[in-house]
Image (cartoon, rainbow, N blue to C red; front, side, top):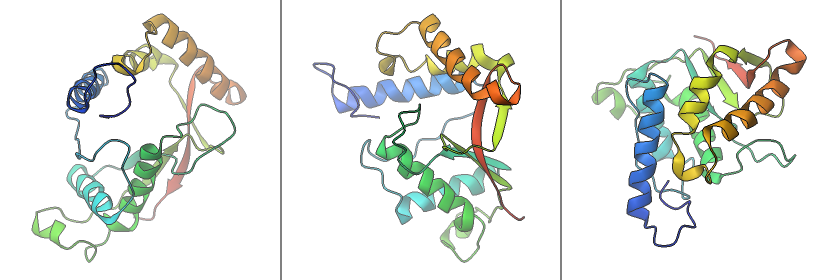
Length: 194
């Protein structure tokens, strides 16, 4: 993100560089082999055909069984959900890329010419959905999760690791309370026929 700052003297170029490094650092904490940036400008993302094609290309490249994405709708209940328009647009683009774009050989046939054969994703897990149907026990992974989150120093508003950890423990305990999990992340799961 190159625009989300109220810091005096910050520039888009500097902030974009900071955020890119933070995301790469978070990926390392999570054990990711790479983090791909599609290069769209912050705060202007729309789920248009170019974005959908780029996401479909990455799905075809990576060939995941599961894609985790943002909930593509604004939720106004005051819960811990992102209302950022880029997050909603990314969620919509991801879902459209999963089905039908990454699956169908006649949608963006130039992707095949680039060497990216169609791929059928088995499931999408949607974060922030108001009616989750999948709970994942992350109790043993809380420290790693918060370490990754706190890599985003420019977005932490001066919060310490311990402060973020405490907030995440409370939030995830609330999510897991009704299903017997000490700490849970929740998703809406969509199954796709393969």
